[in-house]
Image (cartoon, rainbow, N blue to C red; front, side, top):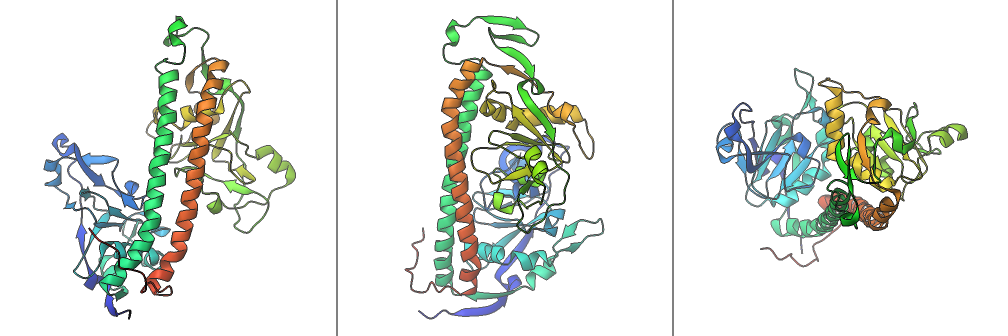
Amino acid sequence: MTIATSQTTLGECVTFLSGGTPSKSNPAYWGGDIPWVSCKDMKVDRLHDTEDHITRLGAQNGTRLVDRGTILIVVRGMILAKVFPIAIAQRQVAFNQDLKAVICREGVVSEYLYYWLKANEHEIVGLADEAAHGTKRLQTDRLVALDVELPQEEYQRRIVAILSAYDDLIENNTRRIHILEDIARRIYEEWFVRFRFPGHENVRMVEREFGLIPEGWNIKSLKDVCCLVQYGYTASAKHEATNSRFLRITDIVPPFIDWDTVPYCDVSEKVFEKYKLVVGDIVIARTGATTGYAKRLNKFHPASIFASYLIRLRANADTSNYFLGIAVESEDYKRFIKANLGGAAQPQANAQVLASKILVVPTTELQREFDKIVEGLMDQKEILQRKNLNLRRTRDLLLPKLISGEIDVSNLPEPVTD
């Protein structure tokens, strides 16, 4: 088949739509079932849901609704200094003024243009300038002028079929990860919050300062159940290969630590031994908007130390690090930290605050029973997360080659469409 392309511009391929924010002072606009997309939701490729929701009335007052399959891009925010967030809506959504919706015209496959934009992310980030108030912005006139070599629609669909197969696998694995996390969290809550652990019928409840707890359990702070509470190492991260990865706050905020993107740090053997991370260690962000975000290190990670803006907790020998990890990675822990930091513009917590959270600690025997169940779940979760990293790497290697035509897909059968 001959690959027919046309030289055009992005402005001739799409229409850009602006969003907005319904008045926050009107409760009738908020809390409905319509996802309302803002920059914080743009961390995924396929957008199924959002943190905030609006009502039908809210959708009619100050924002805009777009249908499933619409491309959403961030056009304002400091994140544009580094990356160009882009997602494709999987349901009808509304969106705020920091985003634009991209509506494809006839002959342009929406999913193809989504991948085209991802393939040209570096060039698009370079178009961002600074608004009067200092934040980054992508001006529409610069976007519409981008040159696009557009293949015929049949060829676009062939490319989409290849790339979306990777995204389908990633999405399926992500659902399985969420199920595994949910199972572990539900067991934790059932056993250690509701006290419905195996054999609970035969355990007497006793009154303590925080209410009734099972006999033999204790009330302790995080510090009490840790043999180590430690600030990280102050150093400048280097990207050339040296002897240790250097874990930072930005590395622990995503759902999974991508060790390939964690920079290296050249340190002495003495420093490495002092700050070396081991299986079961928990690291917590102690400054910035992500103060209180935490990660428990499971079984796979390279030789690494942790940065000074992190605090490391290591559980005592008689305390389960799985139990501790779920407790510290929870939303409840983030709320606790937020409540203890007040409304500071730049939050910062010391080790005393981060380790002061009070826990109801079960018996060592029950924690070991918990470990037997949760260890397998966490291992499966880590395997799936690593599979997703490999799938993303492969997709991202193929992406520019497919979009540029370097890989010819003309001999592939035309995908079946709904």
